[in-house]
Image (cartoon, rainbow, N blue to C red; front, side):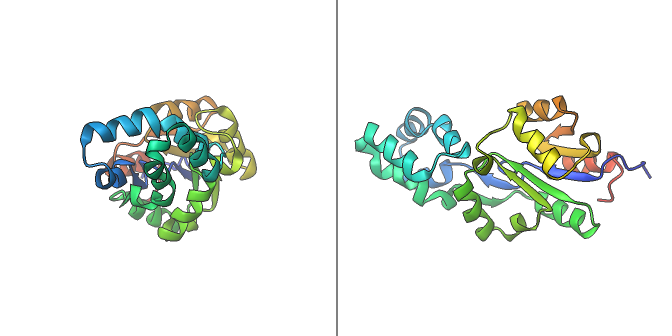
Amino acid sequence: MTERSVDDVVFDIGGVLLDWSPDYLYRELIPDAGQREHFLTKIATPEWNMQQDAGRTWVEAVAELSSLHPEHAEWIEAYDTGWLQMVGGLIEGTAELITELRDQGIPTYALTNFSAEKWEVAKEAFPILTGFTGEVVSGTEQTVKPGEKIYRILLERYNLDPARSFYTDDKDYNVIAARAVGIDAETFVNAPTLRTHLRSRGLPV
């Protein structure tokens, strides 16, 4: 048995535990692929959405963008009102891993770029999100990954030893930022690979 080198496991949410993509909603609303791509890359952009992850309210976001693109107001509003339809479900295997860790008494944490408002919606829809030992949500903290501040908030709030905390995220740059503050981190590929990473650190999964 590998000597255990990790006490806590920290999870990103979108792309690791929740399968989230605006395409799930907009394939229905905008059947034309070219028109849909234009809307999601030029109008309701990832950068626009990230501002909600950084703390802007959805009311403000929808009003501002709709004033710039009144012809698309209905589609813009749907990004807010239809948000849950962008979640395809839980990513296969990750939820089971989290449950195994919790059953073994290993603390699990969420560290996620997520709108504070939508985090509450997601927790209601997916109860596994309510069981973390602690959570750091960018929209609540008003600071996003990969900025150093949000990692520091996690470590200080929950008194975690970075060297004995393991973090996984589907974005390489967020993993690099975690390593920069001393956290043991790996990019999420899929649940079996994550299981291998955790086992190599002596965790019983």
